[in-house]
Image (cartoon, rainbow, N blue to C red; front, side):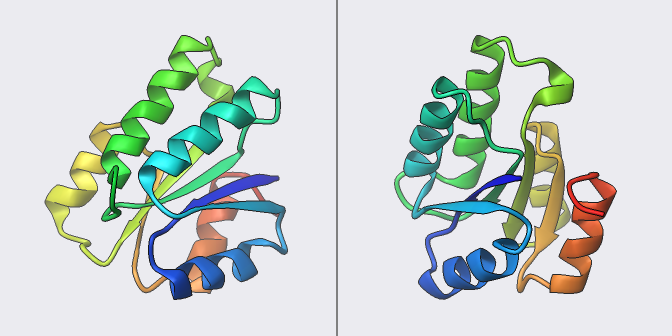
Length: 131
């Protein structure tokens, strides 16, 4: 599994990378702008991501903007819906309006922070990314 983690907080980036590296190759982006660039480059190289973890609050481009642009890139590249990346939005802001906005914009799932490894594993299983 190819994984992209977009997180501006250093500690959370390291934590997510260590946790998810047992499931696949992890690439890191420090903000939404870098995440969109990494996603686009990977798709151009024929090595798209299976899982994209986007923090909502990031500098330069927030998670919502990154999500929107990633989905636009997939559409422009005619990626079939069933082959599009699973995008998990995360934030300490687990307010209903944030969750609803993320789903309305095309995220696959939402994970509140701090990330609970057991819940996140269950989520990955539910998305058929791990067994």
